[in-house]
Image 1 (cartoon, rainbow over the protein chains, first blue to last red):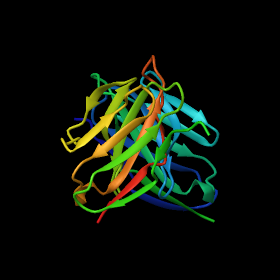
Image 2: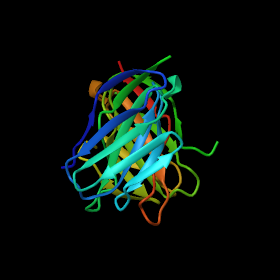
Image 3: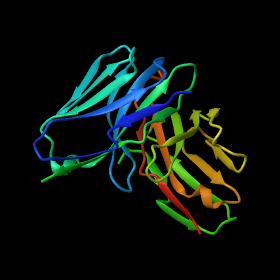
Length: 113
Length: 115
């Protein structure tokens, strides 16, 4: 059974800092990995999708990397802003015909102005 | 707005009542997913449809839960004889096919509170 772990559970940093969020998964046989952002009481906003054959994806100040063999992904946020404050969720789509995503519990990020 | 739409946003009901939620996916997305999220946890997969066919169900989907997508467009999730433990956010997502390797896009969810 696939399990996804996110570290740290919570993070508070001053505005302007670069930061890294970590995600690990137990079964490396994945189709893809997706990073989401969730604001309080809201649904999920898709940030980046990395296919299993890819090593990284970039969108603006966000960069996500994937090391499938070691079961790890990182989300790098450059020049953090107060508007980046949210919960960041990592999810994997495993192989074997299963199509639902398996999520971690998220990293609750606070950017201090 | 062409995003995933869910209705209602909030539902408060008494234990034992039946509730039904609706999800309208992004147009032309033929895959539709239901998830459940409790406080402090990541979403948990419940079930998914490709067009009108329900292709996968999680063990979390007890016999009190039923989902339909009759015409391959909108979907409904019904919970019968609600219990306290059903209190959660119910999220719907959709994705495009045919490759199957497409991002899932989520709606804002329906928050269910059981009194």
